[in-house]
Amino acid sequence: MKERYDDLDAYIADLKSEIAANEQCATHHYNLGLALLTKRDFVGAEECFLNAVRHSPRLAEAYVQLGGICLERGDLDGCLRYNEEAANCRAKFPVPWSNIGFVHLQRGEPDKALSALKKAVKWEPNFVQAINALATAHFMKGEYDDAIAACNDVIKKQPGFGPAWNNMALALFEKGEYARAVEAVDKARECGFEVRPEFLEELAPHRK
Image (tube, rainbow, N blue to C red; front, top):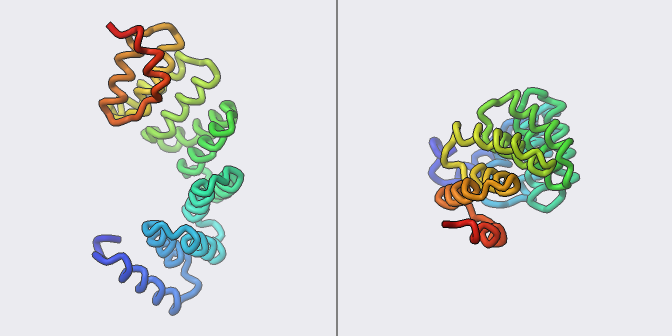
């Protein structure tokens, strides 16, 4: 977008002109939705994405964006519904599967989360956010070794991914490997991750 337009408002105005000339073009509606999201105009963006799927009912990316808007409102049901619709449109699209997994994690449903997240990683093996979410799901089930393995996978791909270091620290702590947990949590903080103060307090007695 920025390659063609330095001014977001000019880009939006141009898209609106394009839509006025060709109401049926789902891509223009979708791009206008993205531009409005940049301005945090969620109501306007939602209308654009709904128009996009009206004109192109299998435009999976638009359903994902609609799910994101639902999440912004705290509407987990809507987020799940739209991402399931996206996955139905394109079964090999990893993003909706990852989002479906995220919703199930928020609901405390790690088994359902694992099922969705494994599909996300199957279609995109380098999807570090999804792999880290897998670690969270394993942690919730008390599968600490699996959680650590998932964290290691993330860290190999992206050493500065703080959430994976934090998840590793949590799993190591539960296994009683306190020295390694301290090392991992320090890495998380070095990477800019904001570790829960309560966890830091639990680790404090185990620092040398």
